[in-house]
Image (tube, rainbow, N blue to C red):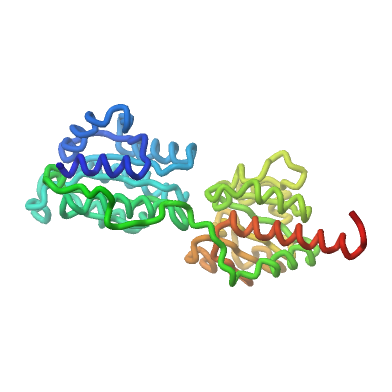
Length: 345
């Protein structure tokens, strides 16, 4: 089958239901095939490629799925960069598919030729340029895995026009097998009991929760832990919704646009349990004066975010949901043990 059809079949295999796009010459073969997939792959037409990616972002945030955007070569591809960069900063899982000039024309400064894979490399988790139609299925599978795993983010797949027209065999099952589920297991090496002990023994602990909590669907586990230990919670802008704003333990949003109580609590804290956050400059301000007396425990699924901006005393590279769940279990076991020792019920 044609490369364009392999692409559509691969999107279906990855669980895609909706594609946001704006057509152009380099992706006409893909649009021809999309007609044949009506009822299975829904296409939503935007009015501009930047809007296409923002629509895919909104879809990803609202559904928890990976957003898919489709754009043509040249200016169509470069128009996607703002949306891609935004998704990268906000950790939103996207797969952005762009058209490219035919392979013989690459490197000749052909009409609407642009190295979009190179341009987006600093703001994507990975950028592909597909060379042959028989690579498409594996590339799509790998792209969705990368977009969803670890710290989510955008992946770009650039496909030359003649590759979408090239005939190739579509494997019944891709030779590259990847688990597309979220990586939520917590290593046995992580001593969560020490975290709980610090949360219990300090006088002014504060939970600093960010977008990583919502991305890992860990809001319920966070509420359980906070209510068990009676901890105050401050959230980032991306963490809004991670903890109920009306809860008595909520301090609201922190940072330069945040609440006075949240900022004062963090400044005066003796322990900060930071989970799923980046210690962004909008939150920290002058890093030399940020929470000067606090011991900081930082939990994040992305190891590169740890110690990037702030001196951290303890770090855990793990999914927020797994850490919260383990902390809650330890709290429950400790409470049960205390009751048994006192003969209570």
